[in-house]
Amino acid sequence: MKSLKKINNEVYYVKKGIAFITQKHISFLKKRVKFTKRKRARICLHKNQKSKLHEMIIILSKDTYIRPHKHINKAESLHVIEGLADVIFFDYKGKIIKKIRLSAKKDKFTFYYRLSSSVFHTFKLKSKNFIFHETTEGPLLKKKTIYAKWSPSENNQFEVKKFINTL
Image (cartoon, rainbow, N blue to C red; front, side):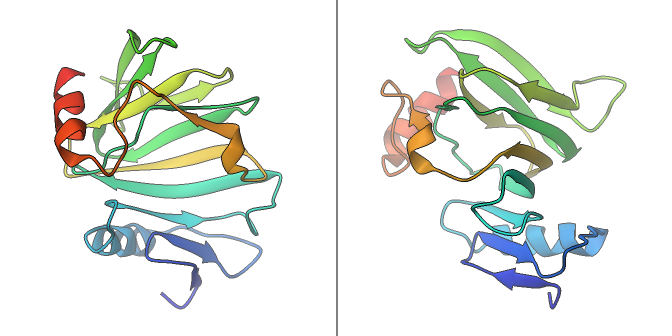
């Protein structure tokens, strides 16, 4: 898409200061996600990684694994656009403390959440694609994301499948 700047196979930024997202952008993400190694892609609506506010349209395919993680002193919100997933919250030992079904079908499921505290969380994908609008605080600092030691790394596919099946 001409209106997007490609950073890598997973990340695109809007080129203009005023961002408009249409179904063409959603279709673009659906096509791109198939060719990404980690089965995820995003369009960033903020200017760059240093921006104080980050807004993204993100797609996860059914094969995506989001390693349980938490953000230190950083809030995030998620608004579902399309698809179905469970968001799962854990205590520091890996025990599930809450599991919520997310869907854009507003009459049946939760379609929005805001996470204001540092709590481990992940997704269990239930549909071919899960598309959402995420807002979080910037700048992007990898040291402010802590991955759960009790969860498998993305590289260990066998352990990932076992872990996902336990959720």
